[in-house]
Image 1: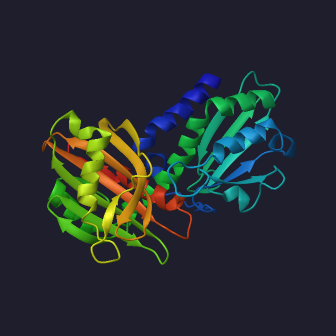
Image 2: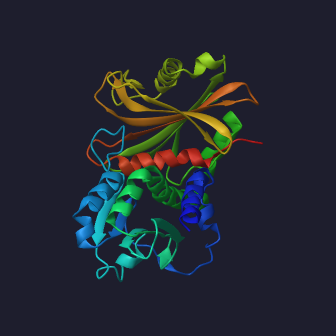
Image 3: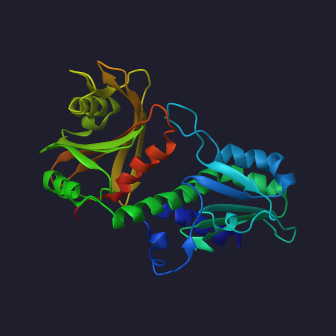
Length: 331
């Protein structure tokens, strides 16, 4: 039983690049709308477990700081309730983690359910014979637990973008780069050039944006961190700052993170860091995704940034991170 449920959890993580498949079969359901804000999580857990080592371990996983943000923000905003308080609107929350012990169990198990009482909703049920087994399980599978919960949030964003999107920007991306990309509603096209496109989403006190650029692939040396930063600075300089002569650049105060991963069979390079404005006082976090388009022999980069000097940045960053899952290269 444990092996089957663990495989189910791993399989859900492996599906992280498949868009909103977890929900598409439920489009015709007439369930009530899920409650709660994005990246908010209800943990259903008895008081004795929550105030002990198990609770400490759960908090260390679920509220661990998100890396590469200007301020400390947790992966999830956790709200804990007891079984007695788990009713009404609380039971209809978008993200739920139930924790319980059952002495009859031989080992810890985890079950994943979707849209139990509302939609879109994910409910994780974590059961073990005692607190020690539960604590050890959470510690050993922290990355998978976070990935499943984060995928549920990403699927909701993808589903919304597929329903409401900016067709004009999508056509410009296809024309310039030969790549299909669904752009969520609200973005406006700020620059449209054959090798560079910039779109932004403006809020009263924050801004999300992305720019796409492409250039000839000159071999593996073009994909080193130094080469990617140099290319980023070359194209980011086309994004003007608020004062005359100012422009975006990559901050030199922090070394960007560098990661290679596969998504739907395609190799990508992720870089995370911070951007500044040369000639002015602005900045924030960014994440870029780079791949080689073998059809054209060119490097393709989707570069996403957030400017939010007064508000928390986690949800804005998650929003631009989801854009990668809306990119589709021709077969």
